[in-house]
Amino acid sequence: FNFEGNYDLVKFIRLVQQKGMYVTLRVGPFIQAEWNHGGLPYWLREVPGIVFRTDNEPYKKHMKAFVGKIIQMMKDEKLFAPQGGPIILAQIENEYNHIQLAYEEEGDRYVQWAANMAVAFDIGVPWVMCKQKDAPDPVINACNGRHCGDTFSGPNKPYKPSIWTENWTAQYRVFGDPVSQRSAEDIAFSVARFFSKNGNLVNYYMYHGGTNFGRTSSAFTTTRYYDEAPLDEYGLERQPKWSHLRDAHTAML
Image (cartoon, rainbow, N blue to C red; front, side, top):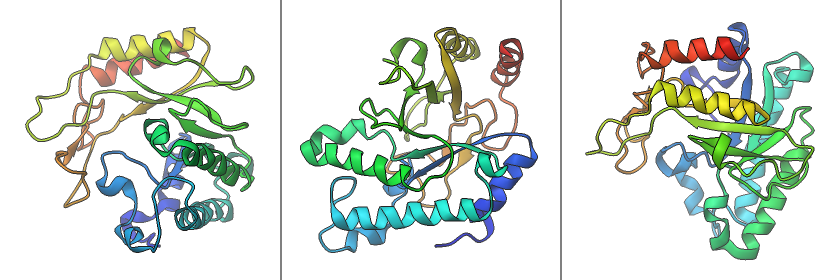
């Protein structure tokens, strides 16, 4: 594990809290995010008998160790909301529904295992699974997309809140793609519509673009990432998205 320099997770979360914001701790460990290998370290491929993201004992062993390490660090630093910290939600796995059918029954068992493993850490805040229609209780299924007020089938239990984990402000690009466009009006309208249909939380993806240096990008993905976000990869305001969303947020308060 390396938490030095730019990898100082605790420092980052404390900075978020200092700025008056909240955190959804998306632990993964598979994160997608157009990151090379989905964020999984390459040495995992050399583990004998390993199969990623399924009911596979070698993979589950390393996944549990990683999740446990992050969770314990957050607990020790008192960063979960019941401890006075900014972390109000946590996420296990990421958009697993995309590949679950390929694993058949082993995929179904893996979802159950991942949910039970996460909940057992007893972090004091809810767990979510994005794009996971069969998220086991008490884990909350959440929506990713551009128009979740229309496309989201809703929580899979009546007592779960309606959560939008990724409101896509643009789109990542592969080499040769044209500039990704999504209007400020469309983003703002989608947020208002989601809340009008009993939505509880909207999280943007991405609100601040970035740069994937070196070989951190996945295959064919440009190193500029979400440069059409409300704040671009340099932190500069991308107008009119930034100010239009600011005004929309103020109106919805």
